[in-house]
Amino acid sequence: MEEKTIFTTKEAAKYLGISPATIYRMEKQGLISPTRTPGGQRRFTRESIESYLEESQNFEAPQNPSRYKKGDSLIREPESVYLVEGAEQVGIDTPTQVDELAFHRDSMVIYNADILKTKNIREDSVDLIVTSPPYNVGIKYNSHDDTMSYNDYLSFSKDWLAKCYKLVKNDGRFCLNIPLDKNKGGQQSVCADITTIAKQVGFKYHSTIIWNEQNISRRTAWGSWLSATAPYVIAPVEVIVILYKMDWRKTSGSRKSDITKGEFMEWTNGVWNFMGESKKRVGHPTPFPVELPRRCMKLFSFVGDTVLDPFLGSGSTLLACLQTGRKGIGIEIDKKYCELAKRRLITEGHINQLRLNVREGAKEWQKTEALAI
Image (cartoon, rainbow, N blue to C red; front, side, top):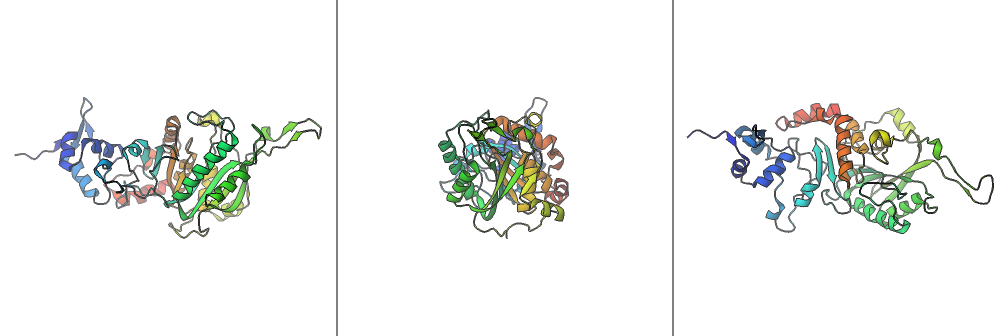
């Protein structure tokens, strides 16, 4: 009998000893690639199946978790990229979490998820967190209430900061971009209050960088004009609070730095002067410029480190990861913003040019890594 060379989805699943649903998950994550008939039906070649079997010795397929007893774990190190030969699969645990995967290509992952609920990221696995959380100043986001009471906002901050504390390595760092203060709904010392909460959940304080956005229109709020009755003073700056988990001295990672002497001398001065990002250009109500996470990554992490942004927004952090050769994980609760971040990775980051060929493995990674840096 002639050996079968073309398989339907059901036949391929039977050949591999898995369910058709697992085949679909594998396809979505780039582990196996079918061709399509003129009618749009999937067909798998024997060659592609055999190639997967050969490569699968180095990673696990996204199995259906219902087959595992409670307590068994499929979670893998999130900084690993399963398209690279010898690397482990990006962590996926439950069917819900499989659904959270909005984008994964090369070393960039986007989860459409809530940082407080997702279990996709393994604890003690992130080298650096760079993020700018909601400021609670009435911004009209698609999926977040930015008009909480201040006490509720601080409670929310404590919850997500505690989750982040669990995710970073013992020598992991945290660059937290927040306002210095705010006056909407009453004067509040946002930076002081959130820094205090961060220390309460376990983070240690290192320093604060003042970011001067050079936005003259926000330079002052007059209050009582030309009178001492009730003047308002608002600094037109934001801050980047630098925190760490256990040890400030970083010993894990590649130990390869890509920062120049000039950059180091300029950026270790705690006042950064560069413009903010245009929300009209990006299409997001509060984008931050790629320059902000780029500086944080080059100053506080090594090449190849895993960087997490739990409030990804428009995707600036992942664009900076592409520019600096870091592995990026973004979590964003809003589906439309996930699509925006994905679109920016493709159009601005040219990530399509960096796709890995699983058959080429690590050799191909070395070629494409140079493009990403």
